[in-house]
Length: 458
Image 1 (cartoon, one colour):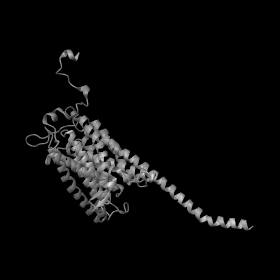
Image 2: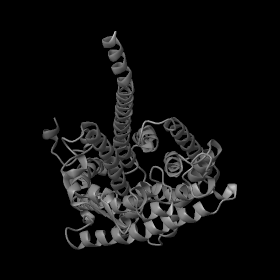
Image 3: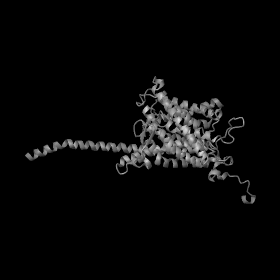
Image 4: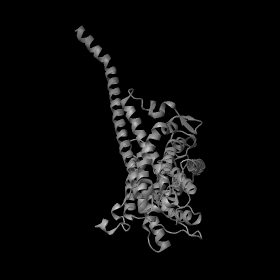
């Protein structure tokens, strides 16, 4: 009887320990389950964003001339390839390393992703960091590829490679640190949910600097300075590219939840809504202005809506998303005309307007349409709800990023110009960069053999 009582007392005394162990096991299982879901969502989103490289390649190639199609495809292949290595070697450390005064990150252990991965210490944590890096590096590659369109059809290939390395290991990571990695703009309260400024404006301001240093394409302006049309060679290709970009943008915006959480579906919804109203806004604007709806402007309108909603996709209502996309679609039409006709900046695909001007608009829209009921992290409601603080913070961020990216990119392009050279010769430009830079033709079956003797054609 005493033995039975002692055994009972022992079991009773163990109950708290058993319960505690069960709780730990449940918490561990819950953590592993959420960790796995987060990694899976990171991977899906990163793949979608990476697929946007194909969209950019098709849009840029379709909106330019056939003689430069191979060159554009090569640039889109190599900017992400060099960008991935540059971000792994140096960019990640500058973006996510220990903050130096809020302006620059640095952790030598993060070079080549060394200490960041904690290999051998915690497999789950290591894989989560790897997934986060994968998601961030495709963003860096997107920023790099935006400038390609603004500088298309006259840039040396080697110069573009040097630029791609510079933006992904220096320019983009510094701005990313400011806003996304606890830098001074993050401390100020700037909200750029998925990168209207960090990604799109950075790429666009770099493209603006490059376009100015390069100058216009031959034949773009007449002797009086009037802009002449240089039509793209394949509008179906450009349209397909636009649809691919829309699909990729679901990863771009919804993936920026940085975890598998409930609001990623809402963010995907407002993203599609803004793309749709941007498309409608641009098509109606060109219809009213030119008498017919223009396809190239309509494609850019859809992209303008996407860029515009990128900063505020986690902060605005459905009606807000509609308005933001619509205004972006209208704005991009007038912006393209302004840069082309008024200040003579030759941007073959409208990249500066789509990503720069609409990136600014989307960033400021947080301070106009943002709601603390939707995004508790905002400093205040937007202006339309009576708040003022957030708009001021957003404006400071927009100005600061332009003040850093444009002059630094201008300097980079000037250095490239003085060293390896930036622009191809006039003869190479007229011949087309496919032949002069790569010895390839995109459409070799259409080559004209007029100079060959008739017996060679038999």
